[in-house]
Image (cartoon, rainbow, N blue to C red; front, side, top):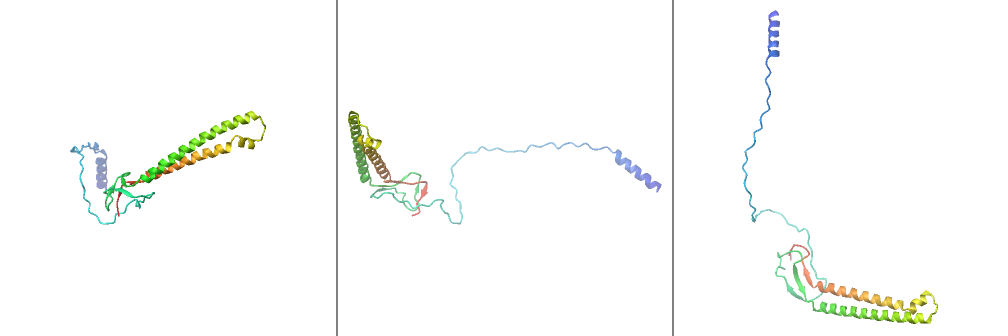
Length: 185
């Protein structure tokens, strides 16, 4: 037992007094890389796939005005492509251009009538001032021709609106693609 205890003590002291190895961090090795200059090119890629392609937007394009078609873009066939705002077809604009001219004339007449009424109102005010009469506000408005003036201003506004409507109809004789599109049928 004494020999075993002595051998155990010697083994323990050898382990305890043994020199400890020093730890060094492993040096980082940079990776070797090869660089290549990139050139941008255009290439057609062919992708073979199975499935059904569905458009994001699908519309039926119709004219908002009536008329005879005078020109059609040759791309207006199944599979044809249009960029946004590209003209698809044109309708005969003659009737709509005449309507614009007529509405311009109506507006000019309404403005002249308004000027005449404003002159009549000035005369009516001068005559009223000469009389020096005292009347209530409603009668004064009638004497000074205020309802007629309001009616003439309304006529000018109506003629201006009719002119805008005629110009809009004329612009609608040119039908354009609302966005980039492909013709289905």
